[in-house]
Image (cartoon, rainbow, N blue to C red):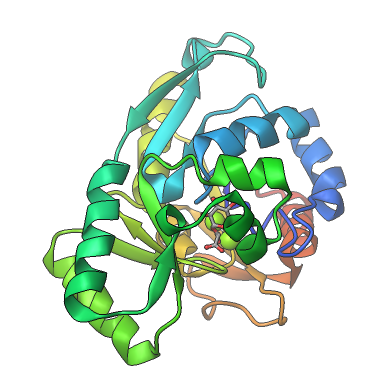
Length: 266
Ligand code: 2M8
Ligand code: MG
Ligand code: MG
């Protein structure tokens, strides 16, 4: 199997950004040689720093599927770590294009939102609780624009319809509405799955997430888990191949991995 996981409020705690509660489960997966691929709305700069801290040398997807990155020779079977040079492929749209769309729709229709492009590092820090260095990395966007939504739900529905009309995509994370190109996390999982399958044959894809921007990821996997959100609720009901993990964020993550191992599914 291969684990494809969201970061914020899934592997990482929503407030502290710590994965401590999932550290034993991560070790177990590493011992069993099960890859953990990060599939996140974070930027490449953020993920590079996190992979280093996690000791993760596997392929990953950033900016909600806007781009995928594979360590050089990973699929030729060469051992890779967090320092291995990366080959990046853009699946979504250019940041400049998304930013222009965000500004145009706001100017034309008067929606109230603040994008990362309107914020400086201190603003992003205040909106996210990230430390200063991480906030700076979060602003290094290439393929998605997070919007802090400051308008009502009707305005959001209107905005989402106009974005779709323009041929783009919105997905909602834990804190922000993300404006994307034509690729989302489900597309990233399918792209990565094809690489694993070419190299090693069919894989069992496990996906874990917490928010709306993970629904495509869970739908594209063979087994999906919703971890509980900070208020203890799950984003969506369970389904045929979608389960509820018993625990919030990284606690739920660890419980899901334990369950898969106990059931001998991975
Ligand atoms: C943003 O994404 C999260 C994901 O759920 C959100 O919408 O709340 C991202 O833009 C990311 O770059 C940043 O690290 C994160 C911080 O909470 O927020
Ligand atoms: Mg999340
Ligand atoms: Mg995310």
